[in-house]
Image (cartoon, rainbow, N blue to C red):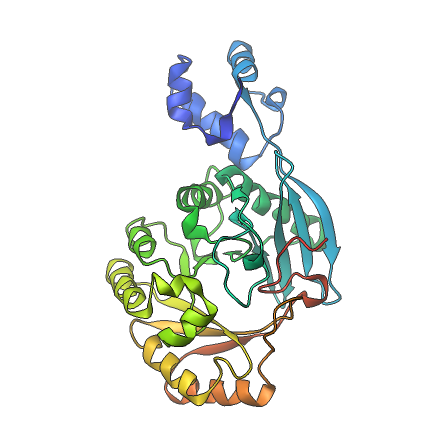
Length: 340
């Protein structure tokens, strides 16, 4: 049975086929810089080696199945994976930024109460090559539609990245390697619900990308109610892992906080968030809740949101309000659930 070449260590592979070491670098460029889909397109490998590759390996292909454009210019992509499963990604144009929001799992197993993806079952983890493909395809779309390069990547689509840890880390390496896409590490953000032991592991990677924590409540009682992960990774455990992360990396984190009307947007909630934000250097992104069928939460009023922000700012917390993008096509934060 043929094997997926993009999931192999190329140095070991070329050595196994008695090829000189520089062949691994050549092959890496074809797979991760040019993202070829056919071995015959490779022009600088010996024909006998190419034949061995064709006889023993295959090149999986991720394609854009569906593309839906929002009235605000946001584009939702349904990506068809090699086994015909579908995941979603989003291209978000805003001011001088072009941001790709990509998925790490088909579905999700965490069941956060305010998130559409959490209503799905997790079908499987997405391979590192398939995560890479989402970025590569959206980069191509940027060039075609805007004549510009992609500026930012966020691992904030379907799934929990730290429950697909090694594939996510490998994908980041392919995306940032100068022999791959050469994308800036500083322009990549990985978002997690806060799996403490994986945050500590991530702190040791020295991979250089940004970390965001989906916090959404800074009180254990409320966080338990809306995020089941808090029952096994409570705020005290999360605090410990964040201190460890900062001691190792000296990098600030971003707290993501969806504003749910009369749920987590009180004065007490704001003061709790102020306290938690002081644990290590951080900033806060407040996120407008986006309506999802079957989910009863409502978006915080403008008045409650502004009061909440005012408390954070008066206490020296850096805070931004992220306006909804792509809500009309199910592409906004918390809406990704394969709505075609």
